[in-house]
Amino acid sequence: MSDITADVVDSQTALEAPSRTAIALVTLALAVGSFGIGTGEFVIMGLLPEVANAFGVSTPQAGHVISAYALGVVVGAPVIAILAAKMARRTLLLLMMAIFAAGNISSALAPTFESFAALRFITGLPHGAYFGVAALVAASMVPVHRRVRAVGQVMLGLTIATLIGTPIATFLGQILNWRAAFMMVGGVGLVTMLLIALFLPKDKVEEGASITRELGALRRIQVWLTLGIAAVGFGGMFSIFSYVATTTTQVAGMGASMVPFVLALFGIGMNVGNVVGSRLGDLSLKGTIGGMMVFNVIIMTLFSLTAANPVMLCLCVFLIGCGFAACPAVQTRLMDVAADAQTLAAASNHSAFNIANALGAWLGGLVISWGFTAAATGYVGAVLSVLGLAVFGLSVALERSGRSA
Image (tube, rainbow, N blue to C red):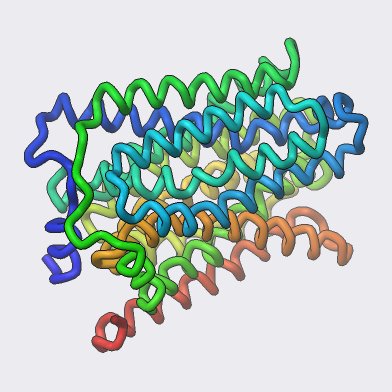
């Protein structure tokens, strides 16, 4: 075990040697929260027409609420992690879920479009901090050789949300009212609060915890490089996913009715990747990150080359979803390289993923606006994955040279 990893393990504050049942219950509580957050983040994409009609705005204008939420994530993750440096993790998780639940319930009751957009920004604030702290708690309960698997189990709620939670909430919003979907997500937040209160034992603030110590993460080049892997390397996934419906209908010539099926394949791939990647990460953390980046380059290139074939399109979309396998490993590496400033680093990972989302969607749209077909988003994704691999290579090289403090 490296000195950094040993420091991370020593600094964790969960109960010592919890039982398997206790670990399972805490993991369940945390995963339910990630399920709620994932559902709340993506459900708006399927309900934009209903929201636009309700507030009397255009669909593109309604899309600004997606950006408002993403901005909330980017801003909220580091700010909350810093301000809550001297707060116990259980208390912080409960506070984050309280804000999330209240934000979604208030969103369902918003009287104007402006208030709805503001509430989506507020609802996004706890997103990154929740995932970061939940990952730290999960990793602290298990032996070091099972940390990535524990982080992956928390993230499983997010991947299941893309497959089950979002379609259910979207369906509910369409047959009842879009407000009902956000009320449902708020209810999941309240359930998460109850589960955390019941199953996660009270913990103490770690000795020496302070805002200054958390800010110390920003002085570590390895933290920035690992965040760079997420912000750039995973942009390709979002580049393809943002325009996969267009690729399905206009390039592969499939009917619009097949789009939900293709999206489901992506969700299934994310779940498979999360489970498999978590196990691979426990065997080799850096090997999983680097290996999956190479995997993404190959599959995303294949996507562009074969997107006109419906069978190959479906296969590639599934495999691109499997690229999520690197996510638990990246989250765990952030814990390692942050040393005693783990909260800020872990929370900021989700700011980086939202940057990847914005970057990938923007570059994919730019290429399409130049006259290329939507299949070209695969080439965009491959280039971004190569850049992510280069950042990862630099991180490993500096670590080996001992110049990456």
